[in-house]
Image (tube, rainbow, N blue to C red):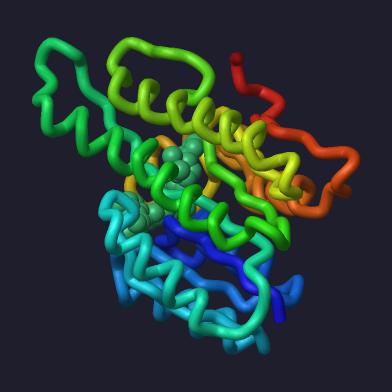
Length: 240
Ligand SMILES: NC(=O)c1ccc[n+]([C@@H]2O[C@H](COP(=O)([O-])OP(=O)(O)OC[C@H]3O[C@@H](n4cnc5c(N)ncnc54)[C@H](OP(=O)(O)O)[C@@H]3O)[C@@H](O)[C@H]2O)c1
């Protein structure tokens, strides 16, 4: 059984959760990683209940040792690591002149630095055998916006890091890709935290999780002589 890792897993009906469900259904032993044991356990039992294989590994994407431990846990199970997804990243709004240096740095650590640590460890494992390494982006990956400097700078740096990885390791058969999610995701997070906003947007104004997962799956399935680096996904009514 091939192995896949999703780092940045929260609720089952969130993007990280549904990426794990999809790649488990396509036959992977999925390692689900995030900071909250209870969320990981819930997702693992959903996957195992559908006949899949999941292993929960509590991981903080901003800590080098934590990511090294995650990859060592993956190494200790049989199978080839064919897919690694870096999905961690929270929105960090705030105006620049009022922003603490710690806030900016911790935003960068999860948005970009963790992507470096995770990418480095995954690339080390995939050298020689090939594999796919995918990163989750946002509108912030593509443009700066007033009130979101910490988020924009971290996400855009992650995108260029991913592009450098794609160029450095493509010749070794490692497909590195990036998915730009250009708008709000129609998942549990927005529906629970901002129910009025979610209702106002409606299904037409929020990006379908299933559609986003299709974009990851598309990149994963591309043949070695027809790779894309990036896919962007938005609703038909998004202004961009
Ligand atoms: N939500 C949106 O509308 C939206 C729009 C565009 C792009 N995105 C991007 O899509 C991705 C998924 O975001 P989502 O908010 O929708 O959530 P999600 O995929 O449902 O879950 C992501 C999970 O990552 C975990 N995480 C956060 N910081 C972490 C860290 N330091 N180490 C390990 N795990 C961490 C969090 O769980 P724990 O707190 O339990 O660790 C969080 O629930 C993110 O990269 C985000 O920037 C989201």
